Image 1 (cartoon, rainbow, N blue to C red):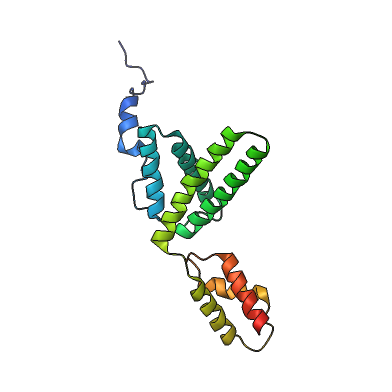
Image 2 (cartoon, rainbow, N blue to C red; image 1 turned 45 degrees about the vertical axis):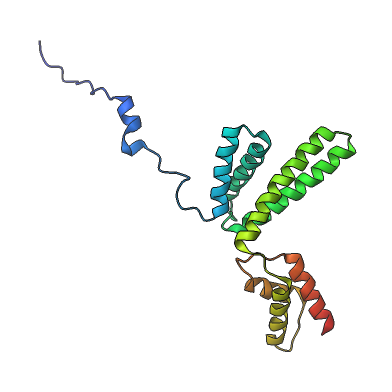
Length: 189
């Protein structure tokens, strides 16, 4: 028997390929997270799965899906301030949906949305405890200091807001509180 000039390739063990280090994914969610609340959301999802708590599981899954989707955009959730704004937005949407369900005489769906609102407000409260919301007195102080440093020129609302919000970059501050403080300060000058 003569050797064939065309050798057949050696068989590859598919099971070996799937478990080799070259084919493993290294995208674990247990690593260092940018936010302790994000880690808490993941842990709460696992706990809700174990306890079969469907309302909490649905809300937490929805929040994690939104966070994942936002991570693929130009403005991802980078810190607790961004997460808080997402939670407040989702809370207001759920409250509006609950009101629409009440108007349509669907109390079952309205109570479901109210439950979602309560769960999300619990996380908003935790973020405010961890990060600390900037107090109104501090906002007014920064606005007064900014206006005092401002050169004698046009002190319009937009430019003052931009400068004041730049001072509070990365801190939890309500833009409506800043806007109110700036309007009051500009009206008094």
